[in-house]
Image (cartoon, rainbow, N blue to C red; front, side, top):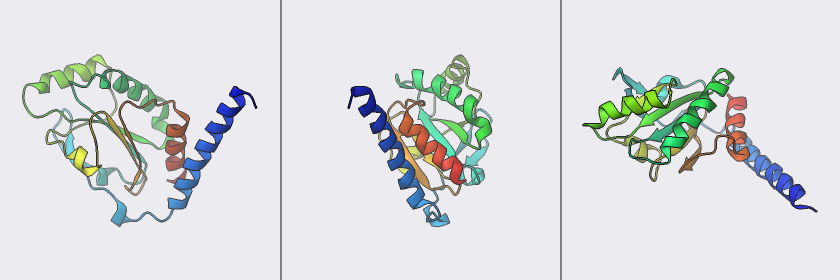
Length: 174
């Protein structure tokens, strides 16, 4: 078997593994599994939560002004959101900077990156504890009931086959 065939089979096996794992969880999620995470809408400051967005799968992506990987990930996330926003997937960028002088920088960076997706602000960094996070950036996929389907630590390739399989399965199950 050639290298290309092995890579193709590896991708198929990985996608099937993710799909089967998600299928095994389908219907077993309950409101007890739901994560109730709250933050503020940015820049309005209105209270928002994952509970407000139940009914569709939700992708939350954390970022901070000091995060070098975020400089590539946030524009890529924006492109992903624009491509997928009509598929029944909600996407939210969550800034985790502490309160203070970063406020202006947050708005400037979001504008420079062309972010038009919904944005939340979590100055207390409750995101990390709510989703057992380690560092920034981090992406969390919740199913339509608010239960965690997957987490990715570090920069995410939004075109990765395994990532897309997880998102597609969450959207299909909604």
